[in-house]
Length: 221
Image (cartoon, rainbow, N blue to C red; front, top):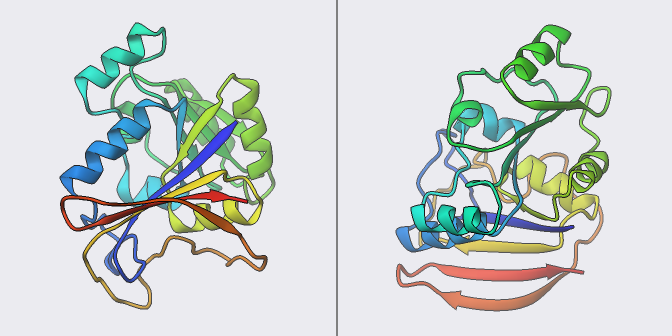
């Protein structure tokens, strides 16, 4: 399995503003790149805070890219995967209802049996992996067992940090926008409990986009 972590952030490392309302960071050029990147994956993963705060659709936007996926026997969109310790998301959320895609939720025993049943009845595949937190290694193993080989992680910062700390990321792609948000409480690329071990990165490429932003690609050693 190859796991790519994709992040759009400001020059000062913020992936959202202090308001945490999904501030616009990516440009049109970068969104086109992300759409191509999404279309090449088997699954797209987001964490609990992103699920509840942003309620992302996690879909391939381009009609032609979806058609290309269908032409090779894939679903129009990659599987949508949520990793959330207490899966309180609504079955009417955009994550659950938007587009044509398999929905997979990894959660812990903090989620009530009633909510587990509700999510499953709404069509989600739900796996309980852990007592209070989701066992991330087990989640990745479960995806691999389902034939998922290419995974895109789209945040948030706590999930990014946890995956990096456990050595579960192969590549990091970072779009740095020509913006500065500031704010000590604004989320960053890697939040959560922090990473106490060195995560060594090998720079693969640097590209300047037409909007003045920069795209960095790293291999995780």
